[in-house]
Image 1 (cartoon, helix red, strand yellow):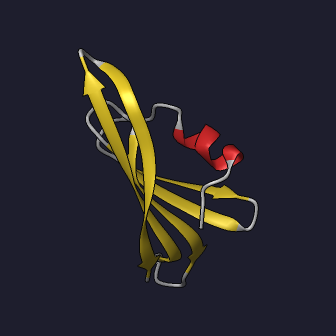
Image 2 (cartoon, helix red, strand yellow):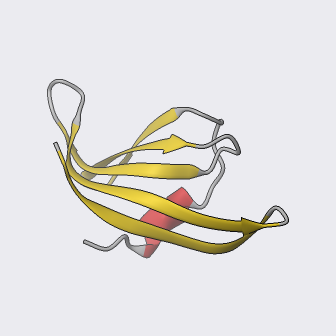
Length: 82
């Protein structure tokens, strides 16, 4: 599964540092963790279960920075999330 442009637009924003953000997008539930700068680095995308966990897919962000500038920004699909 690839991340579409509307979801990537949500993930380009900065959020509160070191937190778990939960959102809804269309039929999907999103939960992502942020780093020290407030950038999303771990994404869970799918349907929220009764216990609060998201069943779907897991993505990790790979950021390459040089002199506080982002050189490379890529989301890797890490498999199923249960």
